[in-house]
Image (tube, rainbow, N blue to C red; front, side, top):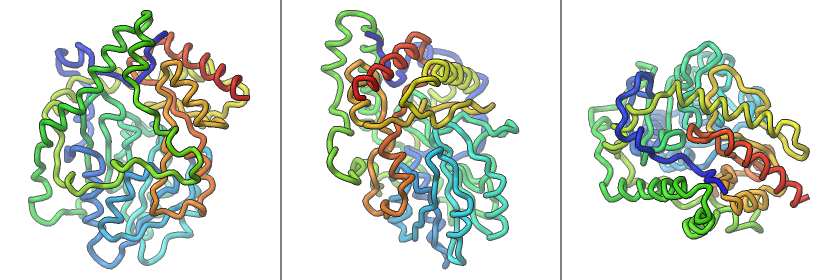
Length: 384
């Protein structure tokens, strides 16, 4: 049995020389401990003045919501269709004189075309915030990096790279300013927390070394945690993990020194190329599969896939079946922020209840993609 989990730190990442292409080449940015630290800073800016309404996509993780609510901002959701496209008419209808900003999430490394939304923001004097946490190395069709169109952009490092922490806040609009210099004075995160964040990499390295050996299954079963989608199967809107709600102790925490150092070791163009190749192999293997709906059935130029997302019935059962076969398939964003009116957004609920994210990362080989594809089809047959 093969290891089909999340990427780990390998020797070349640790001792390799600095690469030509990396995320630090893109923009001048604030390096935060987590992406939500940057979101909290933006929420503080939004809380000034009379216009405190904020438009957020209904399909969201939930962790991006809490910083805005903590700063007493009014949140209204706009519709995202089941193919992850934005309902522009619904978005336009929700703009009022109280609206201050539109928040857009680029899902799974596939950028939205922001032409109309940018025009909408300009005509209504709104900030456009690009959440690029799922699209770190993606580009628009014209070659510009994702995050370069809006007034503000947010990034996440660990979702794409094997690093213990890190996110970035980029402000393109010169009219958006923080008061004073204290906002830029980030503190280093506690060493103990950074060490704890490195422990999963030790586990992954062990599993990678044992991959394909008789001992692999033994250690896989020993080292795995109970999967979160098992916890509340009979709850209509199961809560997201407690850690997703914003903790004010994160305020002003910067990125760890080890992450800052590791970032210069990764080649974004190489990573994009491998992830794209893996995604295309999934399309070959799973495109004809019955009972499986592909959210993105093609791969646009410039997209750097975070995962290979599919829609399946009985998602929790499918994830459990795949996990038993040593595949870290994710029941994507299955938790619901308890402060949002989910009954009003059936498309977002459908996505939260049916999306499975398959690994597509830069350490995956053809054999991994073929194995995962085969096991997914088998799990779906058994569940039918």
